[in-house]
Length: 250
Ligand code: HEM
Image 1 (tube, helix red, strand yellow):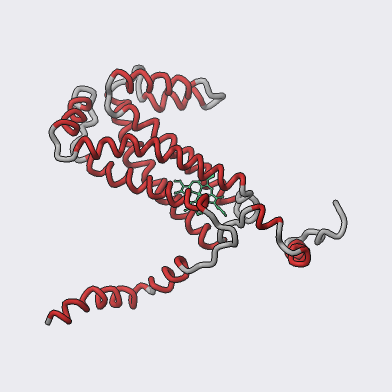
Image 2 (cartoon, helix red, strand yellow):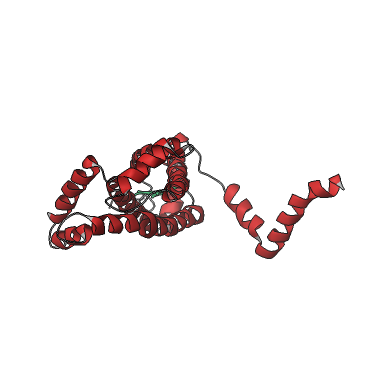
């Protein structure tokens, strides 16, 4: 009986695998070859992903107690910090986690830029990355208003006005964000909906596309490893890519 119970999780996994073929995909993904010279800088993308997951999980718990109304938002955050079990901890993780995610995304972008990973055939992944960056910054901006204290109120007015100075679309963007003549209840509702529904959904979809392309295309070797490639191999690969094989400078 005990032996059967021990086998149960394996049986369940096998049952799911037979119907999804997921193990083939997972094996291919986890055992894929990585280029020579792969180092700690390549963990920055996964670290950003981890920071996003922490934000999503802590955000779900905060949403259970947060009230997006100008009269109750501040009190609901005080309630989370002072009365709810582990509330201050979860709120602190979410607040500091936002800063951590922004720092990590910039470091990851720097890594891909300095390693030349934005070049062919990964341009689309770079473009998706730029959208991910804009969405992450919008996430941080919209989240800042939610406590609805003096600092978040005035900082959001400054942020909305800065958006308004943009060319052509600026005034429309600031009107859209303010959601009325003055920053108030409708602004808070709009920021909350963008912060916890619209952008997380878009982020999940785009991170999925980003990681699909990473697995499909593989990662770029560091520039110093690429520079060391044997001459003959470099010439052949350039010919394949339509180059002149290093025969004469163009
Ligand atoms: C939510 C944000 C993001 C997540 C979760 C994420 C995740 C990842 C992961 C896990 C990888 C695999 C290799 C690595 O970790 O370095 C990767 C690769 C890559 N990412 Fe991101 N990324 C994000 C944002 C960005 C941004 C902002 C850019 C650039 C604008 C970018 C551009 C790239 C490129 C070009 C690659 C391919 C790297 C290579 O071929 O070596 N990513 N990303």
